[in-house]
Length: 267
Ligand code: NAD
Image (cartoon, rainbow, N blue to C red):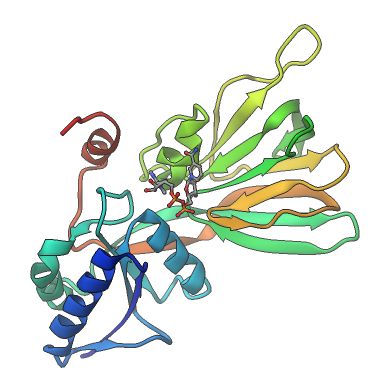
């Protein structure tokens, strides 16, 4: 049975070299077919950013597609295979073709004052900020007012995204087997007048967060690498998506080993 494979790469010289080597290896195997439309497996060549772009390109078919990342720079969080392991990787595509591991995603609904709604899926996080002026927002958890936030903004991340922007703003690193969302503050104002929790919060699968924006004008809203900033946003609702991202688990690395490798080890 054939396996339909799409390849997404960045334009760095090393990635282009790996791309042509991978193409020639795939062409040698009649069961592996390279396609652009309706793939069953998406192989990315580059870094975490390349995998994120591929996710957004194919996120309307998440129940049919598995992802696999080849990294051509530093070890990434979504990229398991190294460029010199291509032959082993291609061989494993045939033997382990049905194995996969899946991770939670963030479901984002942006609600506008005129009644419009926009729906997105995020793999790392969504952040909302207010540029130069203080952002004022009411944070509801499960339809109950939790706090009035004042500060630079808020970040809501998935477990796999917890090591990305979330970590830079002081959020906790969360093991990807945990089905949860994380709300992290970005420079909150805390003094005798204004008060927020002041620490990251982990939200469970039966809960949701809605952030009502109380400041007028344009807000900066991100969904992973996408900028969906705009005016007239009334609220943004976040919950764990019913869809999950599936990775071909041809090569699985211990999560905490990866965290150590990325943030602690000095080689
Ligand atoms: P990029 O290529 O500049 O990526 C920024 C860095 O984030 C890269 O080193 C990448 O490897 C790393 N990264 C991405 N996802 C990660 C993850 N899940 N765990 C650990 N590291 C991860 O930018 P891009 O390609 O546009 O990627 C967008 C992502 O970059 C965003 O989703 C955000 O999480 C992250 N980012 C982080 C910061 C920050 O930490 N201050 C700032 C901007 C963007």
